[in-house]
Length: 178
Image (cartoon, rainbow, N blue to C red; front, side, top):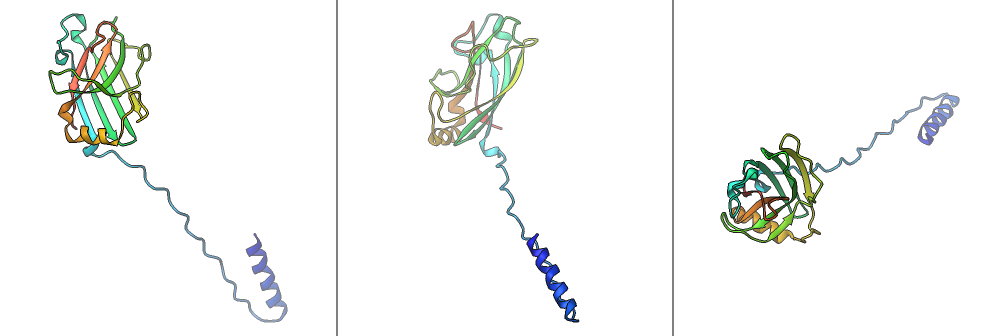
C-alpha cells in the first residue's frame, strides 16, 4: 500500500511542476514452491500373496479358505501396508500382522509390525481391505539397516496375519518385488 501511495505522490508532484512522471510498477517476486512429495518407486514396493497353505504348518481347518494380498512400501522412516484379506469364514477374527524374517517354509521372528491389534478389524463377507503405516519406533523398533536388508533379500522375509484361532498365523506370503 505504501508503494502505491509513494508512486501517486510522485506523480502529483511531477504534474504540479508541469512535467511528466515516469511511473515504475513494482515487479512481483516469485515465492518458493513446495517440494513435491516423494512418490514410491518400484524399488521400494513389494507384494506378498497371502495363503493359508504357506503357513508352517499349513492351515487345514475352516480358515484354510482365507487368502489375501499385501503391498508393502518400504522407506527408512515408514513402512506402509495395503492389505486385502478375502475368503475367511464369518467367525474369523484377524488380530495382528507383521513382517517376519524367514525363507519360505521357515518360521522366523517379527521384524516390523503393522500395529494392528485385536478388535481393530471387522471382516464383512469374510474379508476386509485396510492400510496401516508402521514407524521405526515399533514395537518392535527397527531401523534403516533393516529396510536395506529387506530390499536386498525380500524372499528372506514374509508377511503374516494371525487370527484368534491361529495365533501363529493364518495367512502368509513371501515378499517379492512389485
